[in-house]
Length: 551
Image 1 (spheres, rainbow, N blue to C red):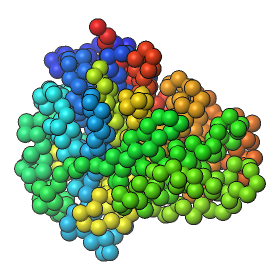
Image 2 (cartoon, rainbow, N blue to C red):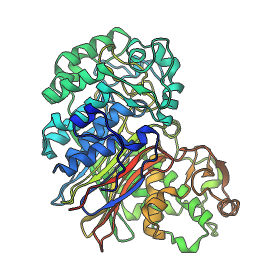
Image 3 (cartoon, rainbow, N blue to C red):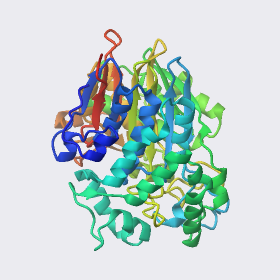
Image 4 (tube, helix red, strand yellow):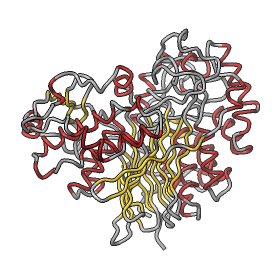
């Protein structure tokens, strides 16, 4: 295995975990390779948990469960057991399934009377992340749940050192956290200050909650003592989630959506996830040839393709709508709207793009989520995206339980009705060649999830870039106002001449130099000739890649 290991604490040894060097302030690899399985996640401890599970004989589902619970402990600003997930699973026999663990609108919620809010108890929906992970384990896992969750429990009970990005996200949310007794107890010092980078964050309340879930498979979370405490607290403080809402919740069969790109098959998670949007964007892109354009102009075409596809998110309410969206015929129709410098093009740059709406743009501005990609030696692969919505979600926590709730209501995910699961740009995706996975990918970043996934796939397939290079290359994103944002930070920013190439298509270009402004990708790629899997973690983030130790 190519993962760097460092010093370890006694408790971590007890659960089979060595502390990676990154947590002690040393660099952690963001690229790794192996023929025996690979992992990329948003945090070194989650990657290490997944690798340990794989090396112990667990499969990709086991590894994903261990990593996802670990992420819920070490990255509370981006995901939580009080949040939601979408899980794309490719079994070793080639069967593809989706598990929908999206948060759900409570039965007593009245969208016509509810006030608009960006945080607080009134924005909380029924959590789905735990149910999603329990179903993944129950239907696809092979190892005891307690052992898989031991990594997360250990980090909650004994603590872990905050990374600089995580510390900054928590600092930005401090004002709201102070107003919640449960959130302040879990994420602030007694004097109300936030934890700094490198400080040890210990979460004993969360550790107890996780132990309960590990002991009963999530029963207490939805129908037992934890559920009672959650509902009593939420209802008492102006929210809508009752005990009956929790008891009724279940992780559903998600829609599998399919398409193709330049001879490769694509499979993704459909509504309420955005797999169809990613597929549509790629199939629009397929109608153009990258060799016909300068790098800047090609980037502008990518931005327009993603923008066109993203505007259709709210219209994907049926299987027939999804089928149309992922058809080659529809991609050809949509491609004619793209400005590529040729005579007769309609041109998105002519006016504010009509395919965006206010709700879509709100999602585009939101940002923090987490993703993990994992594959095992038998060809089972999992792409799992988990989130609380914006930074630190609803920014409230039930005292004594230790976790934050996701934002679902209040307008963040649009006007939604009781029982509905709101749509998002979450897009776990896989690329297949001859039925076998060659890429497992997903991202964080609101609407920039789709944009990031599409650009990395294009870089690898169209340009022959190595996976880590494809993640390091600069990205673009088209805004609500029709501006093309172009990345000017990172390992290789867009040059002035490349940005000029985008302007030749009649688009207004906005250079953006903020680190991490274009999504966080975690991806795997397999060399079909050698069978070697390469894992790459987002270079703008603090995640890590790992490869299983080969025999």
